[in-house]
Image 1 (cartoon, rainbow, N blue to C red):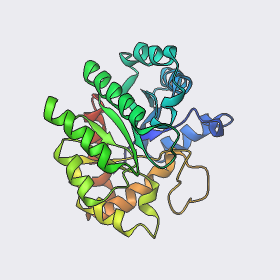
Image 2 (image 1 turned 90 degrees about the horizontal axis):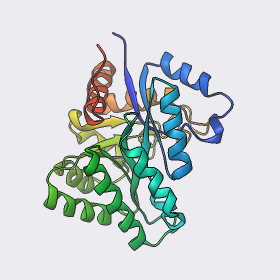
Image 3 (image 1 turned 180 degrees about the vertical axis):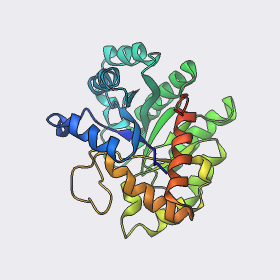
Image 4 (image 1 turned 120 degrees about the vertical axis):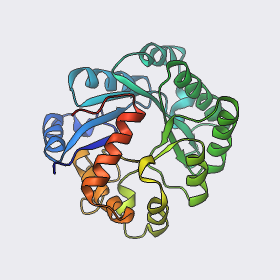
Length: 263
């Protein structure tokens, strides 16, 4: 059986891909990766994501202002995101969310921008890509407020690294959980225990390229083809064949991002 994988989160505009992106995409295709979301974190990278998605059939764009960049936003930056949000190549809004690790923007300002992105996603009926780093309680609080006001949420907790309580809260509100290369690191027993319990129809996988390459590529520049290593570990945890895991997570991604899965 041919394995088809959907890398739901990569940063292919990164300068580390400037010299060999064509080769990177060829390797992804050979590894069975049929679709890749390339993610914006500010105006410039959102513009780059859209341009890449317009150039390559396998790529889709996600546009937004990542929480660590909200203190630098100019008025025209958000105008650009608004202009891009309705484009057919743009399948989601984000990444957005909260980050207490880097302390690059006041948490109140991050929350304001998180709300803006959630509203924009509702406006265009597109999912939201949620970044959360050492801010699980705050993210769940804000998402629960949205859930109580508007009903089930459409989106994904990107590169999930939270605990079982956070996972259960997010799943209960309708979100998908996406796992990246960190799942393969030997020390991450607790994260693997969480991943093992997520329903198969709510799982996604991602590379988060060029960051956090999975074992056995750890320490190298990450790229979408390596998502196959994460998928293999996740299949083992779920107790299903890799083919089953690949088929289901890819179907999940096509469903979430409003696309029809190719025959």
